[in-house]
Length: 107
Image (cartoon, rainbow, N blue to C red; front, side):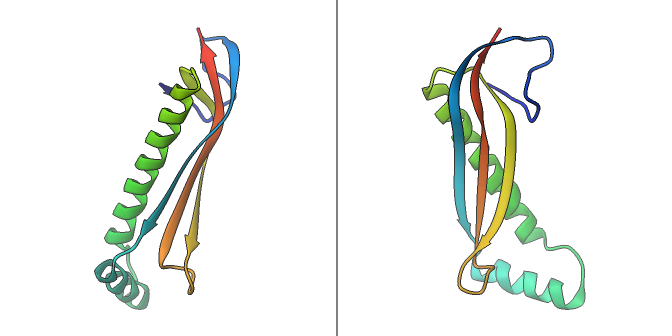
């Protein structure tokens, strides 16, 4: 599956549009990572726990996008956009990763 942020795939022609495809993941941040991130926020520095969670959630959302596009009969997704949002009562308990794009057939 070809995934592109552009509206085309270099050297290939879009021969059929299959429709809008998405992949979504809601990832919870566990208590230990939350404490570590709070300390990093207070003292400064990067939060490896949160970074790892974001990387994993993004990878899962992209896999879901690929699966949905393939189920539509596409061999590529163009115009891909990835969005991250915090969810939860205080705005940081969970992470929503949304990946969207246009499922197409390219040759």
